[in-house]
Length: 230
Image (cartoon, rainbow, N blue to C red; front, side, top):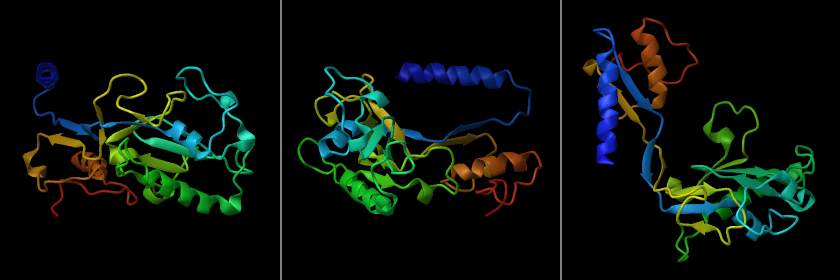
């Protein structure tokens, strides 16, 4: 790993050396990395709870496909990734919805509590955090999940495959993996006069870039230019 970071650092150095004098360089990541304890098989968990019903049990680990699901008996399904995305089979919204709209919020709250209570193999809760998209985003577009699931507060990934024989994995379902996303990202800028605070928000990056070029940020933009004094 040390050799890998040296190579990356050398490549960044070559890139900066190729730029015209006086060029301002900003390195930004919207997330960091943290050690991964394992993965929670979200669809296996839903099957165990009776929320996801398959037409037949898979003979080997496989991706969940729509034609595998008995939709008229299914209430929810999920997707894998660094966090879990859980979708509810809502009557009148999905083609074969089963959860009535008038019971939607109560069911969503119940399944959120059950997800947060998931424990590891020894029975110890892992500290899962569940969010509703409309509570964390100003605007929800497209086809959002009904719940955003941070298994173990991102110490565990979400594994979407089925046929794995249980809900716990000590690797990702896509292969060996030792890290997951972390909330704290990276911000590096060569303008020392901007380093006024130890902690910055990702929302501050865009207003800072606009301000650097003399452009006023739109009034609806979240964040504050780091070039402006607090």
